[in-house]
Image 1 (cartoon, rainbow, N blue to C red):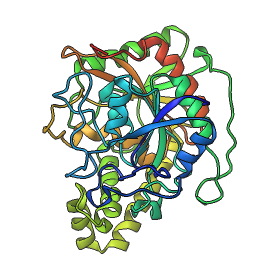
Image 2 (image 1 turned 90 degrees about the horizontal axis):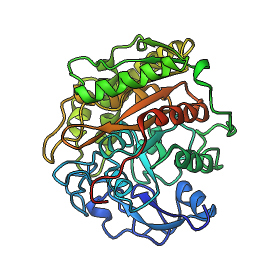
Image 3 (image 1 turned 90 degrees about the vertical axis):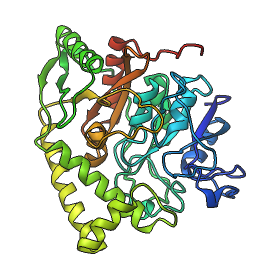
Image 4 (image 1 turned 180 degrees about the horizontal axis):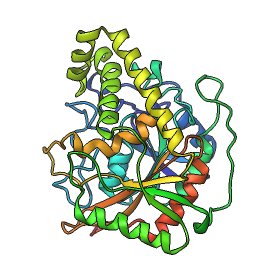
Length: 379
């Protein structure tokens, strides 16, 4: 990355550069003296930090205010890696590293028409990230992952980020591999466009089905199907876990406080947390069993394109964001088209845990079918 300019989501502490954890008011002027592992590894590879990107969806009164979607300034870029998605789409940066606990990479990539990868949980050290967040103590669902305008750049960044740093003890010594790009005729791909209680936007459904047809025509084995786990249950569990961790212990109010307080009052925090972990183990086993017969699962990255500012999506609209987060599986968002309003959307490709490198190869194949990144008008 020598000489490559990059940005970093503001959840990553950067030595000598103001780091506000996505705009948290009480950290408005905080300047860390030490680098987080993500920033340190990228800088050691020669990257030049242009600046930090906003995460306004995390805190209701963000220091830096609202982030707009370059495709239409009246629409949200998603969150919480809002500034990442917007900066990439607008051409302000070629590479950024987002943070994701429950869709924070997937949602902005989908809404802004860029690539995003949520790696296998515990593949990338989180040392320094979420430095005041209780989530870092539990390490449940939280990951750091690259966002870019090509699969090649996702791969380039992830290769630098993975592996133990001697500090985050949750990261196993899984070596990076560079497998050959899988041949389409050898792939076994499951797919679906259906989510309970929510209708997938027609352009998104049509684009998903078109990609599946093209893959089948190329010789891939395809079949409609999902893991044998209720999608709504996965979303609710993800919300519960995030709420318990982020809401119960946060020093300032968050959108998850109500969820956390309700669960912990009913059961007590520790009991509620352990119950949620048990349910998550069951879900993860179901995904492992599913991937014994399939190489990847292709789905819409979201059921609709970006909402207008101030319009909150319903829970069913957010169901697609919970699947990789709760299962711990790697996931790549690939830009897939633009709808009738001129707003972009993406597909998500989910793979078996620890298959990140292989999954990037599949994403590259899918990207060749969708046309990849498109620039917003005027950019």
